[in-house]
Length: 148
Image 1: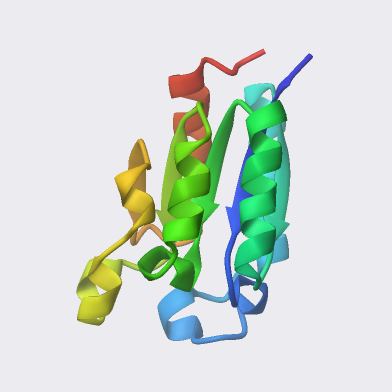
Image 2 (image 1 turned 30 degrees about the horizontal axis):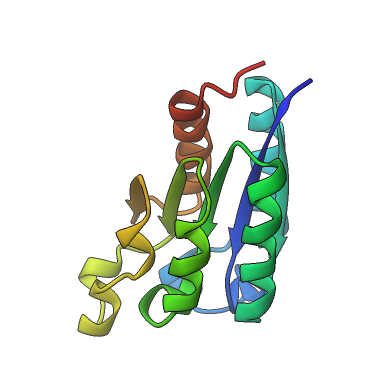
């Protein structure tokens, strides 16, 4: 049976492809999910691809992942810079965590340079566009040994 990887997306990522395409590109979140699902099948893992604009929902999903996931890929979006609660939830997860940002946050406003999530993440991928999700999924498989 294939292992499960959670791919969690934070606020406003439901607008991917429509919101600031000069920063985030024209791919939609549905496009990213399709690409990740195809790669997951290739790698012999399953994914649970989720998005919420609500901090508490993301925390609940991280709690669920504790019981069933081999790893977490997370794009916390704006919660990156503000959520100690998401950090605390991730600290209670034993598997690998890879943080993803579509844009290079270090080339943007100074407040985006700080990440609470990075204090827990085993790796951070920023500025690789939506390809960062696939890079993160490959890394989870490598680190967690989740290949079937």
